[in-house]
Length: 346
Image (cartoon, rainbow, N blue to C red; front, side, top):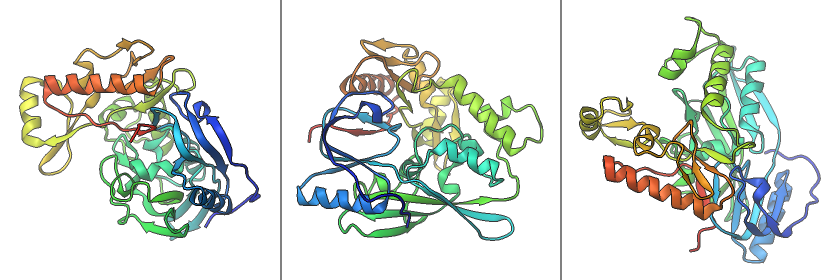
């Protein structure tokens, strides 16, 4: 259990959430508070229960689309702390509080010679969001390292620990997006890393940029950062939430048929009977790369990224619907959103 700081905090009314989301969308939270420890969080949950308020937890805001004003209580999870425990001569368990920045922690682990997360460098967001999405990049996923997730049960306000198996991880999904959606708030994440240098350099675009045939973990980290900076816009400069669509998982026979008609379409094995295809390629070949629709658009370097010039959440979702419709019309493949959408009327 992670606890630190004062138990004093303030619940505010009618707060603009623009500073708390990477799309820089201006919407109003009916009630808002930031929590730095479990005591404050339990106080916030008690306030919500007493006043019959719906709870919306947010972290770094890097995977949110705010489609309208948010009723109830928005809780900004700002718990901090990192705790390491040696498991053996070659393994260490690191417990990260939910409010720690993901990329900063990847760099922190590398500095401390705790290896494994280098392929996941520069993914935006905080630690608490990582298990929800089962974040992944360049051949590595969070579930490869996760040991447990500490949560608070919103129904009971009790702290519980979920194992990796309990989390029911899949491609960009978990129990937190499925059967346990809105049941928990994540407090901390424990990952098991190696104290022996290990690298995963087989992902094609990563392999192509590496200059050494025997790369170090630092080489992987630096190469991944370069690829991501070259391809993806900085949310501080151009508001965006990174990849807006998942790479579709489709039946292998359908993928094989697409490969005949579109031999340049990137297709990757997923399971014995399914394949993963590139959403970016599908979107780009529907003519959307660099497309602009009013105050929102598709980034000129990366078709997966929707950007907000001066629009709102509804504008973003209308554009996303247009993209999904045209991709299905042309390729008969359905795209799914990666970010979570809040503020849609019931």
